[in-house]
Image (cartoon, rainbow, N blue to C red):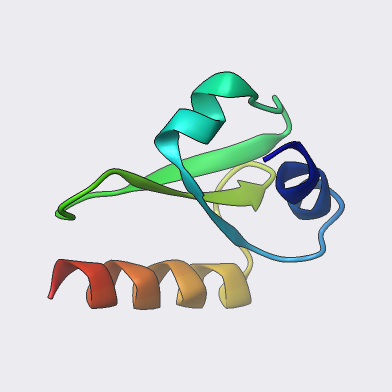
Length: 69
């Protein structure tokens, strides 16, 4: 979880992390958005404050659609 968040903070992408992993270690410079309507709690870790860059927003929208179906 530490490495994944470090990569996100470096701008190297978007990650899906379990909520428990975020409770164990949470970087203050990584924004986590809870994807609601799921059978389990899933967070997408992104870099910086909203609004998200278009690519990140598209991934979050796709994840939300796929997990809420």
